[in-house]
Image (cartoon, rainbow, N blue to C red; front, side, top):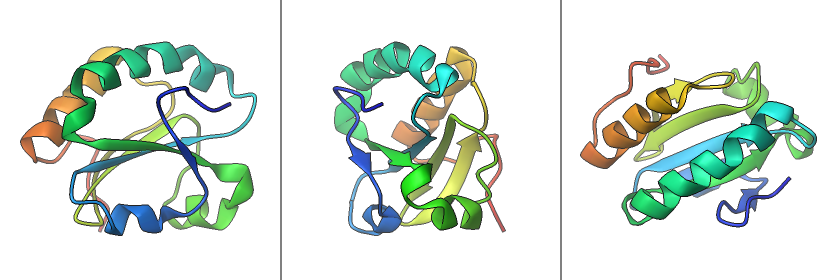
Length: 117
């Protein structure tokens, strides 16, 4: 499942090479919640996409990276700034939560999802 707007990646090193804030959307093929949220995510990207980068990460191609970041369910959205995790939304987020995360990303703050230690 690849979004028309969100590129699919299999290497998380991208979080270190982008000057904008980065959101990694962890997904697996055939994930019904991932597919259901995709059109709404795409609309938000169309509105705010020049203020951050978002990438889909296929867990099945690199499960070790997902384990390292303690991704336990899909979809999971993790927000990085300067290569450091600043927040996350696990499972199927309410769109208001996702919009709040985008506002936080755009303003450069941290999300309520909690920064990893």
